Image (cartoon, rainbow, N blue to C red):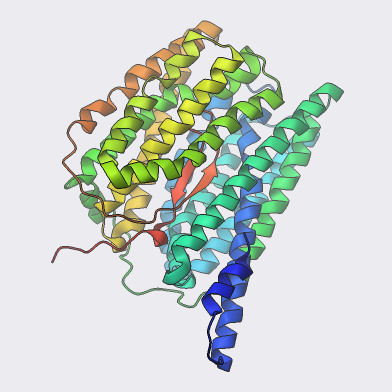
Length: 462
C-alpha cells in the first residue's frame, strides 16, 4: 500500500496551501508511512517467528503436550499482564510511549529463543515464561494502540486506510509463514533444522524492532484523550453481563473452550504423528488463513443483507463439526479442503461476533470491555487445552488419543448452542469493520484484533 497515495487524496485542493497546512500534511504523510511500515514488519514477525514456536518446541524434544500448551498458557498469562496497561499509560501520560515500550520488549523476547536454538536446548519453564512475556507485551499494546490511532489518523480516511493496512499485514504474515516453512524444509534435508530456527527468530526479532522504530516515528497529537473511561473491573464486568453482551460473551467463551480441546494439538499431530513436511504444514495452515481473509468481504455483504445474527448461525454451525473432520481421514487433500471450510466458517463467526459484540458497547467502554473479553477468552483457552492435554496423557499420546481429543472437542463446542438460541434480536448498524491478524492458528486460521477506531460510534442511551 502506498501511504503517499492516501496523503495525495487528502491534500488534493485547488487553493494555495498555508505553511501550517503543509506542515500538517508532512506529519500526516510520515505517520501514514510509518504505520504501513509497522504493519508490514509486524506481519513478517508473526509469520516467520511467533507461529513457529510450537514447531521449535517439538524440534527440541519437549513433547507433544507441551507444544500444545505453550500456545495457550502464555496467552492467559499475557492477558493478565495486559491489565497493567491502563495504569502504565496513566503513569507514562502517553499511549504512544507505552505501545513503543511493549513492542520493544516483545521483539527482545526472541533473543533467548535464538540462543536456545544455537545451543540446541532450553528448559520448558523458560520457554513458557518467555512466551508469557511475549504475549503479555503484545496484548498490552492493543487497547492503547487503538486509542492512540484514533487520535492520529483523520476520520475521513481512517476506514479506507486501515483496511488497506490490514491487507498488507495479512500478506506479510502469510509471506513470512511460507518463508519459514520452506526454509525449515530445506534445512531438514541438510540436517540442521534447529539452527534454522535461530535464523528465523533473528528475522522475527529484527522485524519487530523495525516495527517498534516505525511506531516511535509516529506522532501523538493527544497523549491522553478526553472521554476515555478508566479501567474498572466491576464496571467492565457489569457491562459484559447485562443485556445482550452477556450471552454473546458466554457463547464466545464456550466456543473457545471447545475449540481449544483440540486446537493446540493440531501442530504436534501434523508434524509428529502424521509426519508432514514443514512445507506441507505451512501450506495447510496458510490455506485456512487465505480462505478466511478472502471470504471476509463476502461475509460482510451477507451481514449487510441478512443481518449479523444470521451470519453468526452460519459460523457456529460451520465450526462445530470441524475437528471431527480430522477423525474421518488424514488424507492431505481432504485436510486442505477442510482448512478451506475452516477459514470460511471462522471468518463468518468472528465477523458476526465482532459486529454484534461491539454493537452493544458504547465507544468509550470498548477498550475496557475488550480487556475483559481477552482475559475471559484466555481462561477458556486454558480450560479447553487442559482437557485436551488430559485426554492425550490418558491415551499415552497415541494417534487414537489425538482422535479422541478431536471428537470431544466437537461435543464441547456444541455447548455454545445454548447461548446462541438465547441471544435477543440485535440490529447491527452498517459500519466499516477492520481486523488485523495477531497470529496464525491451525484451528482458526488466525487470532485477530479489531481496529476499534474504524467502527462507527454508537449513540448511548440518555
